[in-house]
Image (cartoon, rainbow, N blue to C red; front, side, top):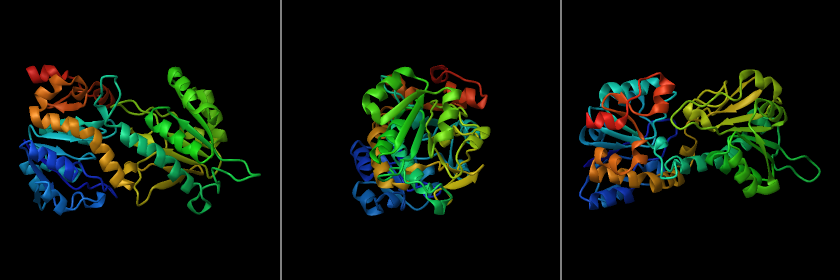
Length: 372
């Protein structure tokens, strides 16, 4: 198979879809790998490293897309890249289609076979390709939230860990999944007061066993959310519905309950955000203030640490990409039903139920399309 990777175009997005080690492994299996020049430079991988791995360096993304049967990226294509997509081409990347109907329409109309990292599942129903970025985003959320609590950024001027004789800051984490758990780890590590809310009582029991008295766990009811928001210095939104839009658990009227200068970090912004007032921001302009509350809603948080993020991502995504390259997408999804869950668009149809429901599209079973 001919496989390509291009330089990411999102603001301050330095990750890359294939590392030189990935390229070398694919070339050793007889595949051809195309890499846009400087695609991996921001993550610490220069063109010479890809050439040594046996990859072919091309000057433009258009050349890579034109030559490749499968494109491996990190983030969803930007509108200027839609024209490069073609019928039957495999696109393997994070897609986050629920809040992006324009991209979904482009993929469907162009007949792309679109495989989304974020909806691939393993045998236990977990999301292995989302996990490493959730871990990184969770840790970063506390780091970034602590920074924007500083007075010079519009925050309350709170040191989350406190000092002797001064109360520690209060962190509220809404959602106890992977991102929320890693946010809690980072929050406990700086000695903040931490409350974590979730609707899954089994998950809350597990987290209480893990963190003990370091974290207060609460059922995520409307009353508990409102009470916690009123007390919080930093709120982390980490709710996830795989493939679907995130529910707006923090509504605009709730902001009036919060302290002036408190901070919301909405990790869920890729899927629309769990705060009603959230809107996507960039690393260049990461925050805005509404109702006196600082909102941090960067849509590619792990892009700030591209070396760590690229390797962590490749550790999980490469094995699925390798399977697609070796067997073809159709055979690969028959071999691994979890990979089949990752196919969001195929044959001009939406083949992921949550994506279809979020975008009001007709859902079609993937194997019905393949076998038609």
